[in-house]
Image 1 (cartoon, rainbow, N blue to C red):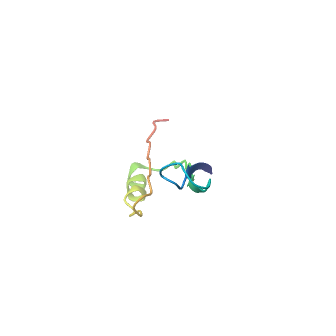
Image 2 (cartoon, rainbow, N blue to C red):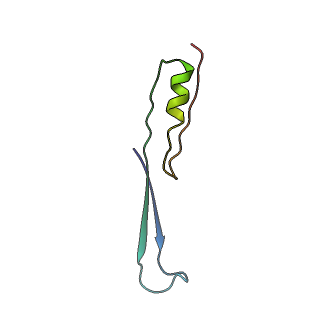
Length: 62
């Protein structure tokens, strides 16, 4: 899991007390090797996925 953290000042003008907002984004990566015919891979990639989830499929000739 890769964690990206951003800390910003709450005050837009820079005056006042030093108060900060902290934002965090976590990136989870999974790698799966499937040794199957193209029909099976096509069926797997046809599964509906929630918005905001990115999937990359690479087909390699071995």
